[in-house]
Length: 296
Image 1 (cartoon, one colour):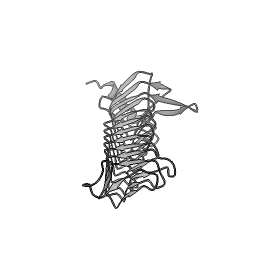
Image 2 (cartoon, rainbow, N blue to C red):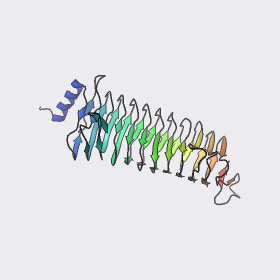
Image 3 (cartoon, helix red, strand yellow):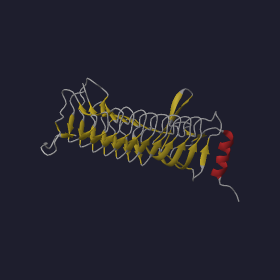
Image 4 (tube, rainbow, N blue to C red):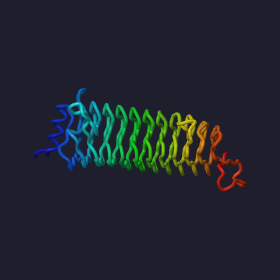
């Protein structure tokens, strides 16, 4: 029986140990369930640009064992950067690569699994990461640039921070657990309906202008929520969350200007917010007002 062109291509990749390189724009690379495997120590990236390209679909296969990244968004070509932009990465497993797992840039969408890579799990610029898992990576689980939305993702047991993002992002319905570098690092970001537990150092670390709502944050070796930019006006709103078994529930000392309402707190120390924050607290739910935090 004749072998498919993709199967023959996989054999060539196994033998050569070199990266695959893309063609033009508006191209679909369907791995059809096959694997791209880097088998030598000098193999580079599994998939990488060979010039500026955009509107690429990469789907349905395994990319593993490469000396660099599984999917690389940019490289230097004649000492100038070239980029792979506006990609759709779907149903890809990026695993056991010495560099990061999946790295895409502006306007991209990711729906993948990235695990046990030597650096980060998933990196994206302006874009969408949905229904993805990033676990056991030797760096951050998910790295976001600005204006990125991360929805229904899992970041688990990475050595870096679970999710680290720049300004003006949206994080909804994610599970962020057991990451050694902290749970979620954010600024000017909406964080809603997330489960954030068993992370080292902090559950959520904010700089300014964040909205944290409806989250379950617990079992942290530091604060459930911590302020990263001390001494400046936070302008964040922390409302309707549950904090439990953290060393401190909310720690915003010297980080004034935040609104902290309607949270429930069961921690070693519940509130350490300092002056300049609005954080009414009651130890008795029966007599608490509608905006009180309930500390038990």
